[in-house]
Image 1 (cartoon, chains in turn cyan, red):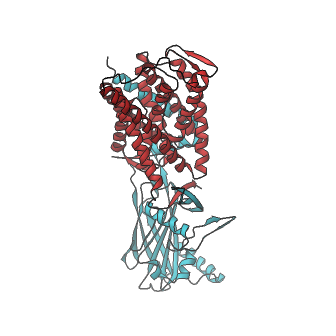
Image 2 (spheres, helix red, strand yellow):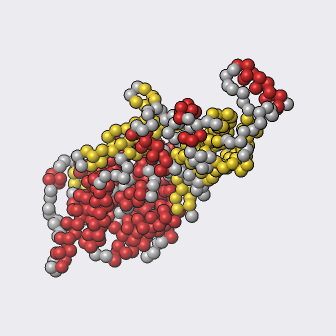
Image 3 (spheres, helix red, strand yellow):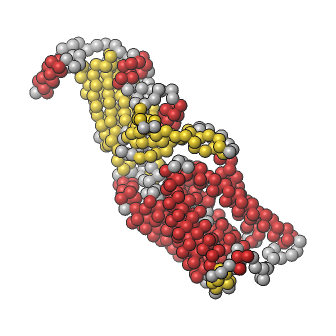
Length: 259
Length: 307
């Protein structure tokens, strides 16, 4: 049944002439479908497994593949600010807004991306931190800049230092020529939300297959309860925190009472 | 042992934060101050964002000043009437401060504002305290009383209209400086995440001539109410109060404060003031250093909004 559906799909694609005949199929699986941030969360390592399968048994499998996994966290708008000395003190003088950029971005591959495909292919498919689209608000426009623009460089550098952005060139290991595995590190302060996994398979410098997967990072238990309360019921939350302070103060004065 | 802070969005070592609470609590108990001017920079230092630090420390100070206020209340060593008038102004000051805090945060200048206020306030107040207490220590060395009593001395502040009598403190002063002091403390507290005890006590002594017997207790009541209301206001406007962080801090803080108070009672007043002056001055210098020295990275990132 599956095979027939795939065949029909293939026929449709061939008929449209949009893509070259797909010879390989990617099957991937994540170690978890959900990451829960609870009170003892200190970061986590996800594992993605996958196999390369010949599609409909048409073409024999090639001998050498390259694989790139791009993980993107929930989108955020962030402002990069630049300090300058004004009257002897360091002040933020200039800033640039990065609009709806991934809060987490990991590019994992089996070898440096520059060796996998020609530059324009990488650019078009947004592979690697240098090629990923990071739109900035410049005046009325929103556009990505050249990759060595100072604000973009600083933004990527800071995000890499924080562990939010990373490019690991030896992260994908081929267990057999067609079975691969990669580990995705999530730092302890990862943003919550939906994470997308974009897996691209290359052979001889061209993309031959692509698949997607996703997981959700959520706060759980007391962490979720507190965060929700702070966001949705600010006044009540503040009042409870204040009462908690008074109670703590009162208990201390009772416990340590001495005369 | 690591614990994840739900609002600061980061894990911290629970014993480190508890230890910070204890240490700052000890100092606050010793000098009769809230200790926010030490706690906020410490939190920023361990990686908590300045905005979350300022908002969460408010509730920590509320807890430790409540313990103190109960002790002074039992000793009848606080002036409720004076505290209430300072409070009225203090709440208006706090509201103005929280509003400015929100505005500056949007303009990317909050960190600078916090830094500059720390530098000016702490170096000036610290310097004055050192000067005053060194003179007192010198006088004590020469065999004269450490503090000069000037019962009849009146400043221009005493010539202002709207005079009010505060019975417990035995003073008769204009309401204008009382309101001005209350407003200033509330305002500074909301912006800097400090209770302002180290500012309020000298102000009450030097400007209003409040006797030492009631000054600390009264200051604690004021600190308690401004910080309690700052907690609620920060929670409503900025959603940045981390209750888990606050709880760990306050538990450490109230315990430390009890031990600090015992040490403080064994020390001579002028030496205590000198030590506090040096501490305040040192923290001020630390902030000045940060503003003047070139930062490691000229760029920084600020979160604007999510999806």
